[in-house]
Image (cartoon, rainbow, N blue to C red; front, side, top):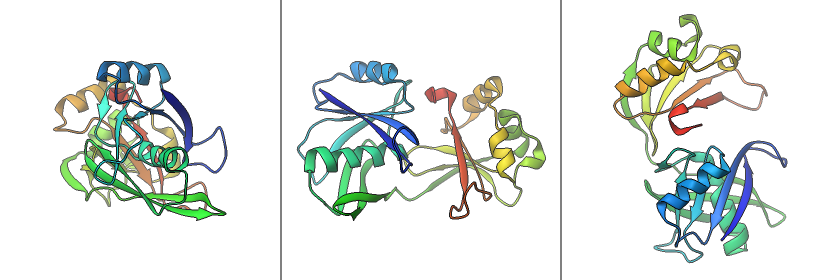
Length: 221
């Protein structure tokens, strides 16, 4: 068994969102995979079951420290990078990951024969229930005025459901602190979402469009 530590969403080492990628994992039990993910203790750990493609894609499982999930964004990108670098070992336009949610293609661009940017094509969004500003303000320890009234607070999924919360400012995004009791109440009553994703249009850098954060004590993230 081999493993790699990948820094995703960054242009330099030891930054961004960390990910552990395990190769040759076909013989590992689900319990062992979960134990490894807990030991790694990153937000996610992925397991590439084998080096041979099946139906055009590579079989991959994704685990948080708490449980397996059908899809997650940065693990998909980081795992596709490892497949291209360590298994395929040559420039390809696309790598497909066979996840629990289904096949997810990741497209590559290259600079001097090395991957430059990666894009994943997620499933079409599925819109679920909506929530009140009062409920999410209490969960996030924010004021009602911090929530942007132009947009709904809604459960949206492209493979893993999130409660999407629009905020007014970067300040509000930075001030978010999860009230664990209120979060637990929210998750108990939510139809399917187990995580909260906040965003605002104010960003740290001018070239970016949105600033976002994700919170999920349920997944130990």
